[in-house]
Image 1 (cartoon, rainbow, N blue to C red):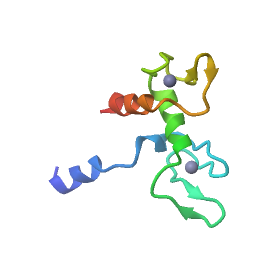
Image 2 (cartoon, helix red, strand yellow):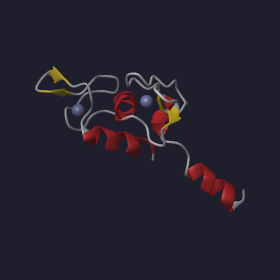
Image 3 (spheres, rainbow, N blue to C red):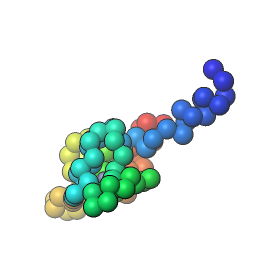
Image 4 (cartoon, protein in one colour):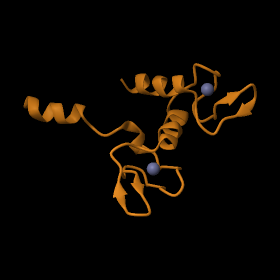
Length: 95
Ligand SMILES: [Zn+2]
Ligand SMILES: [Zn+2]
């Protein structure tokens, strides 16, 4: 296939787009871009909460040693976000 097309594939959307956005009041559905509800503006980036949700279901956390799907925790207290290393881990899982 021509290099130009292959390049397009590599520059694909962020993998976290495959999950719905839990950010209030965005709630973008899976495979839709995050938006600003008040003005309907489409964001180039995803809400951090969406990336965290994606990392939570995709990867184990190297920081607190939980399995995919289990929220991160600090000393037993569940976090609403995830440890930054888990996001890194999720990216590497897909690589
Ligand atoms: Zn969003
Ligand atoms: Zn963690």
